[in-house]
Length: 161
Image (cartoon, rainbow, N blue to C red; front, top):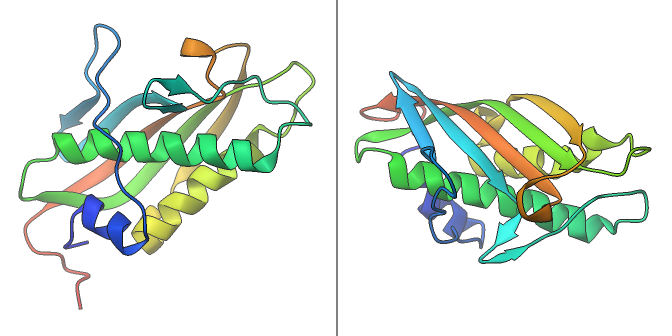
């Protein structure tokens, strides 16, 4: 992808939110060699949390909004951390923590919207491995938290037309 993450999102009619700051003693993104590890991003739009727990009655649009918010926050953190000549080669792994009631079993379906958005943004390079884990609570009472592992590359894009 020769264009920036922000430019690609603009093509899709979306924008990156403000770069999230860590709310503890950790880094938002750690880059080691050519792998970026993006710390967990909770479903937070500005200072407002999209709250859980999710249950079978949670409207699909709330789940979709939570997933998209998490992905965009993670990409905002990633974009801010990338050196100028570095770009996303591909998404490697998406891990999702779903704040759900005890009898909820559709954690993977909650994560599908996050996966779809990564595919939409990055095309085939957005295809990733994934885990969806049910939890009893998340920071701020959030509905969802995601982590990304991303392969990076430097120089011209060999996939560009």
